[in-house]
Length: 215
Image (tube, rainbow, N blue to C red):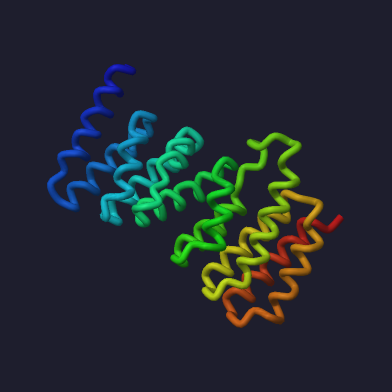
């Protein structure tokens, strides 16, 4: 059975490499991603730089399905010279939620020039699987995330601010230390935030948190 799976992975990788059109590439990547096999990781990462959004989405889906097993390779292969590949890789890391990606996500949330990448990173820092970090590192990492989110809620793009509100709500559920700061921040957004959608999301987060955190 294992040999049959390996053979299928090899054939699917060859299908990606031999695809002769954009549509064929998307289909080939989707087939490879569906196998959820670690041997597919290098090829899926290469696809992120092919300038084919459909194939990149399929590759991201495959990498996210592989989860923690794809993180080291994604971090190693982050391409500073191919912005498109880097942006897709950051999206994958944000969806996986592995704390090893936290430094990259924190930087992208505040400094990336593409709003879609900042939004993905802002959501990603709120979805970190904290139980994967050593206990003695969690408090410091959460404090760092909070400081970055407090900057991100000032982002000029409302969709990025919206993502930051979602992450603030998520963070409040996982830390006792910062709940008061997060609640105060969300309350301020009800007055200071110019976009109604972000205001509404902040109100919803407040309502949910007050219900969940009340004794």
